[in-house]
Image (tube, rainbow, N blue to C red; front, top):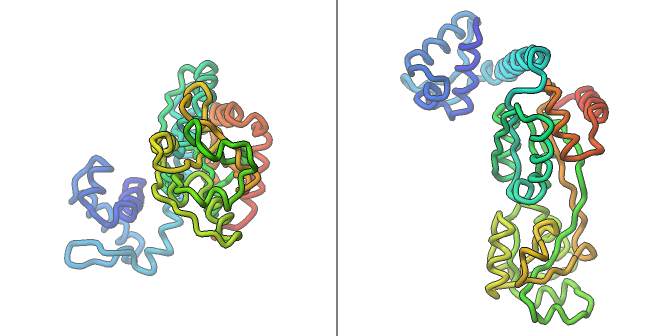
Length: 313
C-alpha cells in the first residue's frame, strides 16, 4: 500500500470517476491510475469501485466504507509534512484562502496587506466562489482557510469560528423617494423592484425570511453574487439595491446613498473555517488573528479541540 494508490482512489471519487481527469490531476497516465487502484484492491481483497467495462461508475459498499479512512490517512500525511515545515521554515510557505466575493473584495484586503507585512515570504493564493464551493475547497484540501457568511457552519467536517457581525444596507440613487427621511419599512421597500444577492450569498436568507414573516412578496428583478453589480444596476435605476453594509463606500459610490436596514433584516455573522484535524502552521494562526483579532491562537486551538471531541457525521 502506498500514498499514490490512496491518492488515485481519492481523486477518482473527486473527479466523478473520470480516470482521464484523475490522471491529469495526479500528473500520470490513465493506465497508471487504473493499475494503482487495482493493486490496492488486490492488496485489500475487496473491490472499491463499481465498473462498467473499463469505466468506473461509482463506489461499492466496501469502497464507501473505506474512503473516509483513505481521506484521513492522506490528511494525516499532509499534517505530518506541514508540521515538519513549520519547524524547518516557520515563516515561509503557501497559504490558500477561499472566500466569497464580498469577503474577498471588502473584508480581506486590509488583513492581507497587514499579514504580508508580517510574513513577506508566505505565498498567498486567493480563491473565490459560492459558500458551497469554498467549503468544498476546504474539504478537498485546495484551501487552508475559508471565509463566508452562509453555509460554512452546516459542514460537520469543518471547524467554524465567528469573525464579525454585519447588517445590510439599501442603496438608491440620489433623489430617490426612499431618501425622504421617513422610516423605512418592509412595506415601503416592497413597493419598488429589488436588486440583491443570489440565494445562498451574503445573508440573502435573512432578507427572504424577513419578507416571508411579514407575508410580503417582494419583486426581485435581478440577483447577483457581486455587490458591485448590484450597485451598478441600482445606480441605473433598475431597482433598489440591497447589499452588505461593508460594500458601500461613501467616497467611491458618490452617485448612491445608503440606508442601514439592520432593523429590517436579521444581523449576519461572517465565519472563518478550516478542516477538522488539520495541522495549522504558525503563520496560519497569525493570518486568522490578523483578519479577526479576537481569534487568537489559543482561542482557535481551544475551538478546534472542542469540535474535535464532537463526532462528525
